[in-house]
Structures are given as C-alpha cells and as structure tokens.
Amino acid sequence: MTRKRPKGVLAMGWACIECAATGRTEHAPTSADYPDSVVRRTSFTAGGGHGWRISALETPRDRSAPWKIVVITGAPSWAEYWAETLAGLPTDREMIVVDRPGYAGSEPAAPVPDIRVQAEALAPVLHAARGQKVMLVGQSYGAAIASLMAEANPGKVDSLVLLSGFFGEAGPTARWLIDVGSKALKVIPRDLRHAVIEASGQRPQLAHARRALARLTIPIHMVHGDKDDFAPIEVAERLAEETLTRRPIKFVRTQGANHFLNDGPAEELLATLEACIPARTRWTFRWPKLAGFTLPWRPGLGLRHQPAAVWSSTVNG
Image 1 (cartoon, rainbow, N blue to C red):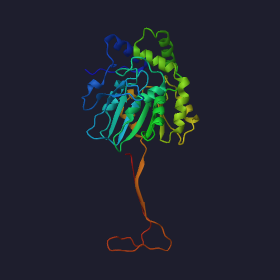
Image 2 (tube, helix red, strand yellow):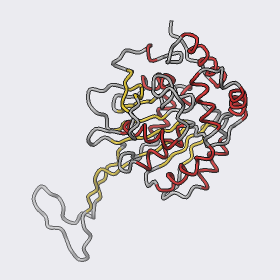
Image 3 (cartoon, helix red, strand yellow):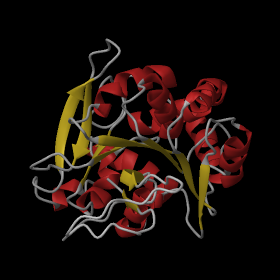
Image 4 (cartoon, helix red, strand yellow):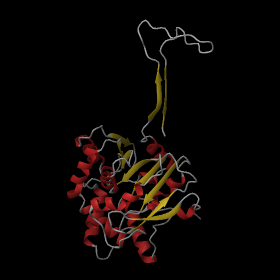
C-alpha cells in the first residue's frame, strides 16, 4: 500500500518526530514508490570548499533534456516531498531536487544558517550538459538562496522561479511553529530544529538576496498561493514591486493554494513551471525591402512581384 506523505506544517513537524524515533533520514519517503528509472537518489560534493556530501533526488534520462529544472527546497529541506512531481515530469525535461546542507541525507550535521554559505555549497548542482538550459526554482526558504545562486553563477541559469518564497516575515502558522520550536530547541528533532534556526535568522540576510535579484538579467517569476499562511503573499508581492530589476518580475497568484504548492496535483505545478520557461526565436528570415527594386524571376522560384516575406519560429526549447 502506497504511503501518503504528511502535508502541512503540523504534519511535517510530526514527520520530524517520527523519523527521529525510527532513525530514518527520509521523511515518509515517496521516491520508493517509483523505480530507479523514474526517480533515483543521487549525491554530489558541495562547492565553496566545504566538501560536504549533498543528497538529492533526480530524474534519470538516457540523453540530456533541453531544460534541466533545479529545485532548492525550503525548511525543513526534504527532496522526498517532490517525488510525485519528479515522477510526473515529461521525458523532454529533467529535474533534480536537493536536500540542503544540514537536512535529511545531506551533510553537515550542524545547521548552516548563512544563506550565502548555502548558495556556495549548492552551486555544483547547476552544472548542465552542453547546450542544456537551466531553470532554478527556489522554494520557500530556498527562494533567497536560489536568488544568490543565480547571481553568483552568471550564464548558468536561464530562468529563476521563486515558489512560495519566504522572505523574513512569517504568517500565523509559521510564527506559531517558530515560537514553539524556539522554546524547545533542545528536544525537537534535528531537521525541525534547523528549520526554526534558519527561519528565525533569515530576515537580516535578505539584503543579499535583494541585491542579487536587482543584478539579474534573466527572467524572474514569483509563484505564490493566495491562501499561504506560512509566507504571506503580500510580502512576496511587495518584494516584487520594490526590487528594481532589469526586467520586471512576473508575479503569478495561484488562487486557493497554500504554501505547499508541490502537495497539489503534480500536473498543475509542472504546467506552472513550464510556463516560466522563456520562449525564444529560433530563426527569422526577412527579404530586404528596396524601393523600385523587383526581385528577379527564375523558373521554380516564383519570386517575381511577391511582397516581402517573413518566416519565424518560436519554440520553448
């Protein structure tokens, strides 16, 4: 019988306690429901000279897909919660979802509350095959980290998506979690403890993320549920309006959705991410317009007295 992963903040807190009691690092794993040919566990060495082993889930592909989607998860940081989305990905896309440093199967054992250190450590996940483009998705607490990663790695990220971004101001559910967790840091499980430490100390660091966003030239999308009681949508909208970027940040309001957009139907989230892939013009050919000039006619060409013509093709990679 397939085991459903817990949803919502309270259920995630219980998942932490349950995993601590059983000695597991995965939290109600769902990747086990799929063969390794669909979703598999992988790892890489952290960047920035840190040398930590970073655990992740990925979609195996026989050949490189045109787009690679890299997901930087929130707090607690559990790639397992993306297994259903990974399994639903079409074959012309590939995805990797990380357990950030200090969570699940990733090192170190201690928390890493500095978002700049997190961005350094996770930079190797942006490696792409030749000709492959990268969409970087920062979920919740991971949104600020993804912003730093995109700015610090020019040319390696082609689209940035901030999904349910948490930007220092907590909603009622998050405030309760942080308040209760802060009073019980010595007894709550590691992943929940690290999440409380991160969330309560993020706000002073947001200046780094704002500067990074302002320097980016790539398309930036913010996707947020209007029922998010963890990271208020008003905070994300204000950040989008106040941050001066080279191109406007596109804000996508998801009606009726809460903080956990990856807990909804996988096809809906995948369609939202697909819409954030920038269209590009593959090629355009235009006959020159010259006053008083008639194109020569040749048998089979049919060009005489024809108006200027334009051919173009727009594709999504």
